[in-house]
Image (cartoon, rainbow, N blue to C red):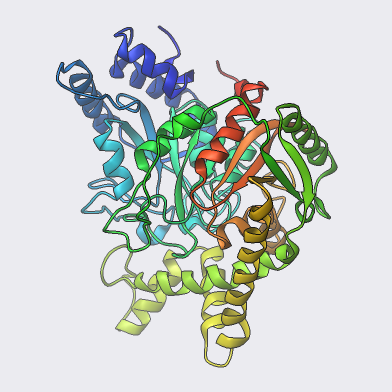
Length: 490
């Protein structure tokens, strides 16, 4: 059977269970695809083919064992991880020169859980350095290209994760989302991306950017796969103090093609100035499709939305300033070898190892936390964060979910947004969700200027099931998720 790399997790699951294909055959097709297109897409930082072949053999033995018990839907499925997730014995660089030689001595919980489910890790994926960016242009190594147009960005910071899934190099990937870093690349690359509720998935082993905002989630071909991967990675972890002790349902039970009676709010603030008219047209059609499926759609308001961007760039940079203080050339990672004393070594190590965007955010965060400015900036931003959360709380008293564009525009060309402020505005629709700790999903809903457009759905805390139900119903009534980029090779 050819081109197994083009199939979904659930389609491959059926073939594996019936013995029609083996994990090794699926892996061979993925590695062949990587060989074909990776020089164009550049989604990976590290490839681990030998490890993957070993894991494929182990998955085959597991699937063949008569006493294996309930079999994981991810067993034998090739996947890849964003390169800010610790993997024992495998480079974890965060796409930064300061970690160009860092090999973790342990696996993060997300990697552990996928291993326990006998998934196959093909490699580690490119990203904006330390997850700081919206285009993957800030990688310390090289930018990743959008499979739909190699002259355009895939979004960020999980650009490698979205591009690898869209380019059919792996069946699914994990990314992390601090202000839209799963949902934005999912929208730009025409795949499904879910940011779970803060605390739903363990962050143990995730290299921190902004600890009160970061969350790990799946990037997949369709909503069913998204539910299957979330089943595997969600749950309480005593090693993560922010992990929520909330029971995990079987998310596949929510996949019903019916929205009858579901109340959906459309925040007007997400449809205002800055929204590309071509994107707006596609999004309005998606709203009408939800109504045809039985949803009751009404306009609503989240009045403090306009303050989300400045609040985020104070809170996130302040936390980044603190988290990145550990990269000093002493314990691990890059160390400058030209310094004569320890203070010079600290300074030169960080000057050589960090890229421009990371330095910019460290300086912003350090300033916001400094004496005399803490109350005026950081503390005020935390108060605004509370107001934004209260806006969502009021909205969810009336609505089951909220819908909006994932991004105000489609994927832009490399170098088009050199002004940092213009780049930051790309996340204007996704950032409020992180500030409030809510779950959000982006699903393909059409095309504008020949590029994919994403529809964002936002739910109550721990209501991923409601999001998946709405996303599944919409997806099953359209064929946007079946559209694939040509990439010059099939």
